[in-house]
Image (cartoon, rainbow, N blue to C red; front, top):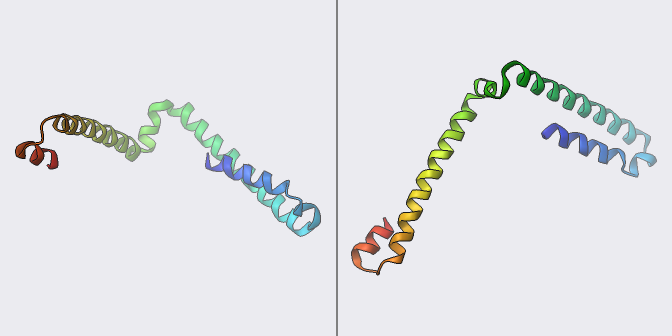
Amino acid sequence: AMSKSAVKISSDLLSNPLCEQEPGFLEMVTAFDTAMKRMDSFNQEKVSCLWLEKGRAGFSSVFPSLNMAVKRREQTLQDYKRLQSKVEKYEEKERTGPVLAKLHQ
């Protein structure tokens, strides 16, 4: 996505009217556009190779920390939902000392 965005920026710069007025700027933006297109092509080729070589599961071996982060996020989300339901339960009860203490906790 990052390289696609860079290609979009370079294309937008090429369509800038300043490119028509300043040949030096046009040359610079054209070189930038070419570099961004090459970078995007390279990135797409590498991602395609990863998909072909290892399939979807292969990304776990390439980015093991990402897989662990997803698992931690899921666990944290489950914990949050469990605690949120407890809070809602205590908020519905009559506001007595022990209920307020548990709600605060």
